[in-house]
Length: 262
Image (cartoon, rainbow, N blue to C red; front, side, top):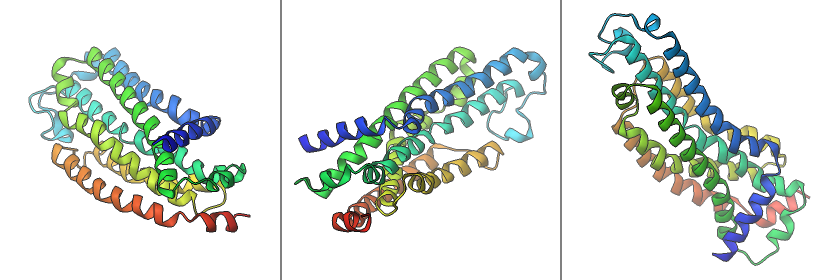
């Protein structure tokens, strides 16, 4: 355990010198909070001029908010869409850290001394994975909490209850860490096989595409996220995480990394 804590401390000391990593951990969550708040503020500023529609929520919203006027329904729908943004953070933040963690150390000549120590591969990768996952989870939870409090102050209680369903809490609190592990496993596998940090970051960045597609689908009204879908996603991610983390340990070969990257 002491070795893993040492790896985590070393990782944070190294990766947070990278401006891209610092931006992803600090400024990206703030951006994800400010974007929905700016939208809600704009809608509130327009007031009744934006909301003088017929009641019932309109055809676009379907059964999402029956019995509400379109202004309140639109606010609730926007809250639901923006809540989905916080499923992107657990993917983007750890990808940036994990993609840099192996190939970045190789380019700075700090990986060889680390691999020469008696630390096992599992301990090494566990430390690197936790160093990427912990900042992602903390940043996501803090940003989501700020989003919830600010949104609650800006909309009516009925709109807030409809837009922020309990399954969003489940998604961010429980599914978020699973997504982070998923992203880290893929990023570390890529990072251990390529020889350039930028290539690793670009390839690993594709892990956010499924969530972006879901966001687009919900934005267009093609489907709505619900509790059942969140539970299915959690079950699938648990299985994928176990498989991918095992593959990460298998793919990471000390001797190959040291000799192939000379």
